[in-house]
Length: 236
Ligand SMILES: O=c1ccn([C@@H]2O[C@H](COP(=O)(O)O)[C@@H](O)[C@H]2O)c(=O)[nH]1
Image 1 (spheres, rainbow, N blue to C red):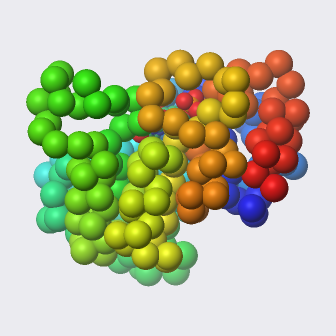
Image 2: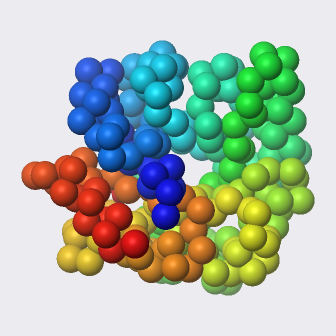
Image 3: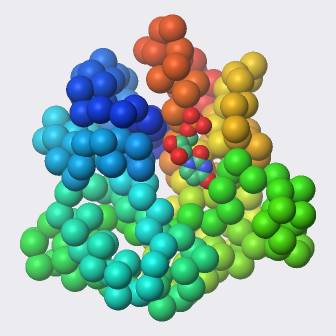
């Protein structure tokens, strides 16, 4: 497993806390995730700062709006220097295409590498009961994830975010080059919290994940470096 395959989620509410985590963990992990909490607290500048510090950023804002709005927002996010940005698969092909095209065009215009644009499928916090009875979807989560992964691929996107439970079916449906980014990673014995469809880091890599996203099992650990080493040991 390469250093870039493990992405640590910086789910904190200030620039200072985020940069403290980056400087503590940077020697052990090369990729960080900026999600809604940190982005709303610190703005796009935090992405630029982490990139300037030499790390990669997955900017996890899950864009979901009409195609024009998502395309325009994607252009702005590309300017942050993030290596991965994402949109909701539920927005449909026009929205997915708009995001991918805008990201590629803006990166080309700026002479920088285009970020991977990936589609979020069914959140890892959702179980079968919530999916069917509360949200009102029929059928199985696995079938929806497969369908959205194929839609994302057909729309020109680079991959998906899904739970580790769906890695194998997405890999089979979309092939070896398609990126599969999986949160819902829990080392053996770790608390689930709100996650429902989980696997251990070793299981997820074995199943074919491109990247693992891990938050609380690392950032909430008493010894964060040891937590990262344990994850890498389990995988290797
Ligand atoms: O389906 C999804 C999509 C995104 N996430 C994000 O990943 C991390 C997971 O953090 P943990 O602390 O390891 O649970 C978090 O930032 C989520 O917003 C997800 O969990 N599931």
